[in-house]
Image (tube, rainbow, N blue to C red; front, side, top):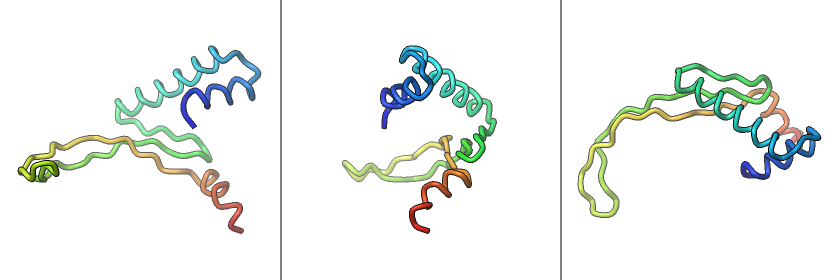
Length: 94
């Protein structure tokens, strides 16, 4: 499912225009992004939590030519699923 598919689902289930649905999705994703940029955790009950994780730099090698290279430290977004989502994903296994 991509953003266009999600927009279609929101428009249909919310009985709203696709343009408005796309705008709502943009607002939500921007709000999550802005919070992560401020090092805030974003929790959506029963769905999951978005956080930022720090990765240390390390010495590696370029797989194309085998040369040594330094990989710089970086920050990455992390999503941890909530209990409700985990429960729904595994409901068919019970």
